[in-house]
Amino acid sequence: MSKVTWPSRAEAQRLTAIVIAFTAAFALFLGILDFLWSQGLQALISFIVGA
Image (tube, rainbow, N blue to C red; front, side):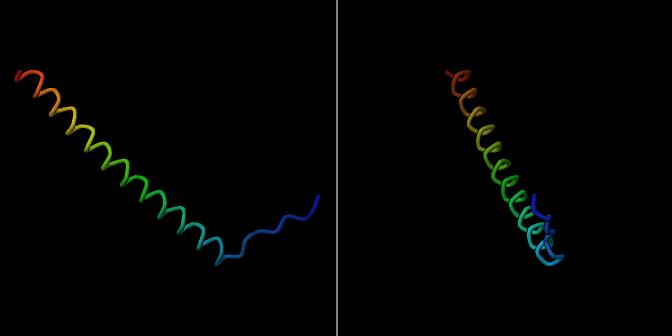
């Protein structure tokens, strides 16, 4: 087994920033998807009840 090489401080900070940015973007995507889904269901229920 070879020796483990740890990332440098700069590389660790860069990768941490990438993970945080990806997590924030994915959370925003899921939030928008949730909003659209709830609006669609409300419209569908209103259509069914109103019919």
